[in-house]
Amino acid sequence: MKAMVLNALCDLEKNSEPLVLTYLPVPVPGEKEILVKVSACGVCHTELDEIEGRTPPPQLPVILGHQVVGRVVDSAPGAKLFRKEERVGVAWIYSACGTCSFCLEGNENLCPEFRATGRDVNGGYAEYMTVSEDFALKIPGVFTDVEAAPLLCAGAIGYRSMKLSGLKDGQYLGLTGFGASAHLVLKMVKHRYPNTEVFVFTRSEKERVFAKELGAVWAGDTGEEAPEKLDSIIDTTPVWKPVVEAMKNLKPGGRLVINAIR
Image (cartoon, rainbow, N blue to C red; front, side):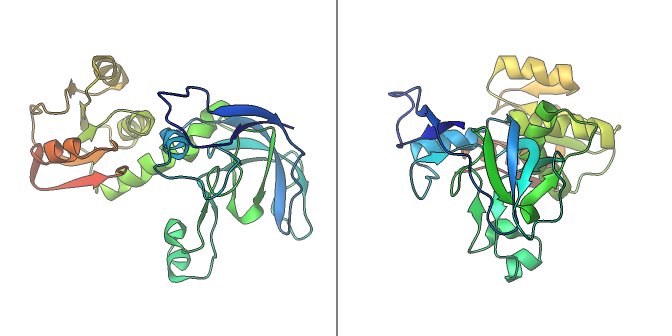
């Protein structure tokens, strides 16, 4: 199969093509695993962190990619949840022990045995990949492959952040940083909370224009003051300054949800 392989960590300013097209054997599914023929794989900012070593793969070479959509083409003995040709998704959580207190609470990402797709094991920048059937996700038919892929990362963390915000219909919500996750949060909020007004903070003028096109009532720079004090703010940036600036825009008792920082 063809795969885009990361052979070594690097500085992307010095090496803009760190992934190498490589021909590899098609992987064989192990116990309770399925073999997935990949049809789409989203690109995430986390891949930059993996390539440059901020969240480095434990061993190299490795195939990146953790927003994977494809179809089941084979399964190992004991794998019974999916039929051949059934469409599935594979997200960031590749596996966890399933028995520790974190797993039993639904916080598999905190499991001591947690493994990340495309970092700790080969991911979806390839024609095929394997995954345990317990960590494969059925994809609703309403989405195309390309539409579904980003929902497995940006969509999932955006939805989680929206829930953690405690937002109620009619309250004011701020979004600081306006990448893929925030785009999807804005669309979800407009659907679920039609009377909520959304205020966006981002350094990019292009993103501020886009935010208004998606339904934001106001968009300004990271350090600007919004025209209203906000009930909740979701931060999706990987840096500290927007967190500090966001605090200035919260109402007393407001809630700041930080969903990405390094």
